[in-house]
Image 1 (cartoon, rainbow, N blue to C red):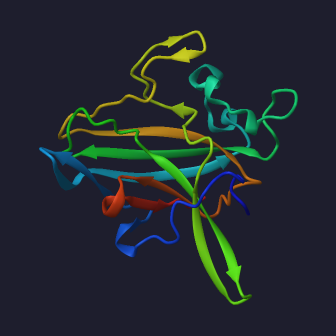
Image 2: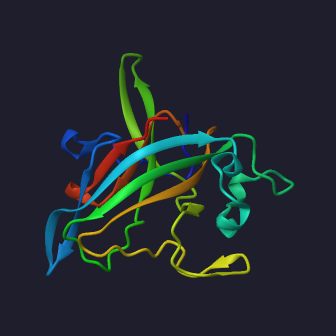
Length: 198
């Protein structure tokens, strides 16, 4: 199942120590005074589901970020293609010692594509979901002005507080393997991945 033709795989495997499971708190790093601080924030995915549309997830049209709907997701009439589904994730963020100005919604979805080599071996290559931006966030801090939002994803969480929120992405199931997707955050050796079980 290919990613977009212009996409390049981000990596070929996930180190076991960076891989987490749904239902388990997964520590995210932060940077303070130029130094990495491990497990400064914890994320826990409690629910994940794939719906034919956002209405089936109980979301109203005016809660969505419609201007982020990319042309690659629509047909000639501007409607979402039948292969485009709505990925709905509920997760909890807990700020243990992260900078309170950190944006807790800095999250990405990647999808693995398995390929055979010589008819024997298989290897995964990971592609960023495109479009990468979520089209739904349950706790926007900003205000809606027409079809636009101000600071829709800009959510800060004070140290010692916990917040449960919901995020949604459009996924073209013809381009991405929905049975092999991961929520990821952080970077380099501190990057963490949670396998999404739908």
